[in-house]
Length: 200
Image 1: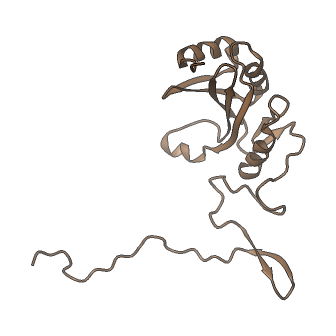
Image 2: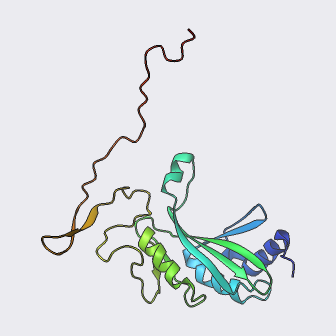
């Protein structure tokens, strides 16, 4: 089966989703649709169940922190979840961006009930970005340690972190302590002899 041309897919998405989509983007024959957290569950069920769409498989889900985009003239919510879906039946793909309405406490509905594969993807986005997936049955950290403070993929998280962990041979256990890494200058210094490069 040949992949659906983007024009037909875009038409099918617009007809099936209607007002659930706030924006359509098409770049390099890839379609991205934008929806809000409040409409995400209904949009997800339509994407999976509508006969013209049939996106049975969630391939990926991740978080994005757009906090630096204000410097480039961008506006909008700070946090989004991005979902990549595949219709095995119709050989189609689509990307969905879901905006979290509150920058201080980003909350987006969980889609585990629609695509069970979202489980650990949502946990990862919670761990790294602090996006809360409402309705997730077991929203715990996945990659960082149990006592970890903060969310390391947020753009305001310090590169060196807040706490470091090391094994203490005297106490015979792992201990946590404030980070002891000294900030350093990473710009290389170039020292040249006087007259370097002069035509002689």
